[in-house]
Amino acid sequence: MPNTDAPAPHTPAERARLARRAAVASLVGTAVEWYDYFIFGTASALVFGPLFFPNPDDPIIGTLSAFAVFGVGFVARPLGAVVFGHFGDKFGRKVALITTLMMMGVSTFLIGLLPTAEQIGLWAAALLVLMRLAQGFAVGGEWGGASLVAVEYAPEDKRGAYGSFPQIGNAVGLVFSTGIFAVVSMLPDDQLFSWGWRIPFLLSAVLIVVGLFIRFKLTETPSFQAAQEQLQNAREAAQVKEKMPLAELFRNFKKPLLLAMGMRLGEAVFGYIVLTIGLTFVENYTDIPRTQVLIASSIAAGFAIYTYYFFGKYSDRIGRRTVFIFGSVFGAAVVFPFFWILAAENILLMYVIYTLAYAIGVGAVYGVEPAFFSELFGTKVRYTGVSLAAQIPSILVGFWPFLATALFAATDGDPWPIAALTVVCLGIGLVCAYLAPETNRTDINDIGEDAR
Image (cartoon, rainbow, N blue to C red; front, side):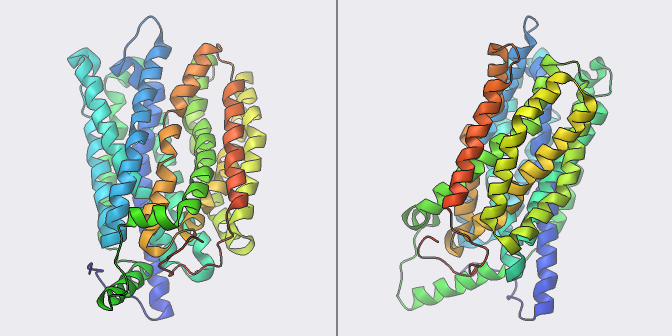
């Protein structure tokens, strides 16, 4: 039987204290991991093209190549979800989360030390791809585990609120990553492209130390400990033969997995419009200074810190499905105006639309996902189920910035096809949320033999 580090808490006060610690640990660890991940996306839009894929005749080709490498990390994410999901379901959430954080931190730090194409030619791009694969593998197991730690420790009527904490960590990571790039992007181009771009990657070493310190203090969740006790008792009584979490997931939880994947697809496609594609559009087809876009992204993420919690908490009252559907509709309503405003080069309205799109559109769907997805799966397959639901769509989502950049190039900067595809994906997420069961009153301690 796995070592669960500590007995489950018995008193309400003790449980509340550990729930708060788990929520903070999820927030801090996720902030560190997503800081690492987001700086790669920002660097892909700004500096990786000329540094690792130089093309003096057409700079957009370099940006396309950089976004292709950005997408490679998403291909590795489902594999990370399977591996870390298995270990998280079999041996505990804590060990998986510590491993993902260390792997992410080392690979990100090493990116800051990489030589460029000017120094070692094609080997620079090969090393960048290798580091990106390591990042993707790590983040494949990060989000699911961080979500479960927060949700499984939460009071029964506050799972949405507590589940929003890893999402808040995502927003904090975005604030830090875009904020630091906003600062270094003010450097003259010769300094930015020689050494300034390395600073955000090297700073990750400090953040990793903080994240590891907090995660080492975690204990296993009560739900995981209860599930392990139930399974151990069943094995001793010869009542069941324990299956691999992945096999159990595909046998009994196919429908929840597909529905969660559809919801994740809509949210992620829309989210990357704000995170990277908008920046690419501005950089190549408008005269808006790149620093203004990075500041707008940071402000939007700052507001999202509050809206993630608001929507998560509100879903405890009115249901996950209602909040998710609202966010999908709102996102579809703002995606076309988002590009119209960028094309008009109105700085003030750009700040407004970035904030509305990210803090409300993304906030409503992303804020409820940890609780919503966790409640769709039984405890003994939950890490695997939540991780795969989030990461299988990443194979498509990861190449979305590449596809969007290619569409920009093919249409001479016309954003209409990109906006239309985004609306379609949000519609898929909306339909999946409508078909999913309402889960905010389910028993999170159910080990799960059948789909919800």
